[in-house]
Length: 248
Image (tube, rainbow, N blue to C red):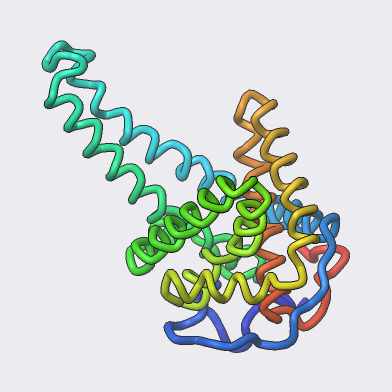
């Protein structure tokens, strides 16, 4: 079965080469229930996404807690200047590592939805884009934060409009500002549907939290796979709706 999300002639793990621009077709329609169902089908077909999500959770958090080891062994005194310096250093490394892994996670999601090869090594392929990803997410957080201070609603609109930015950073190899501009452009006229999807997205995340937190290893990549489908639809990278049943 031909996957409607696979770029013609691409066999690169799910992302376009540098400087690839322009949509592959007009924006395609999508529905919240439909993309969530596709997300579930993707998770069932590619359980490696669950392993990847576990790594994304564990490695940055583990690294961020390393500063407490000298205190636990009595080598350094809690609250001392060296300990504070270590905490700051490891926190910064943890943040950059998180966005490094985020690039790889986006690549894995794109490959999974496109039914392309998705080795776990793809998770650690973010060296070329993680600084751009960090910049895009920093700008997104800044815009959402300022918008939230302006009576909340502008912050929600900014979040929805910039939500797809990370896909342009990874899939289209665009710069931070360019990616956010593209996301804003391609979500225009579709933010009401995105708001409904956001409710479903955070409902899935909350359900995962309620399952002792471990459920997020499934519900979060499920929701992210659904968001990936939305990105592919909005950028015209799907020539037809996803099949009702996935062939195994």
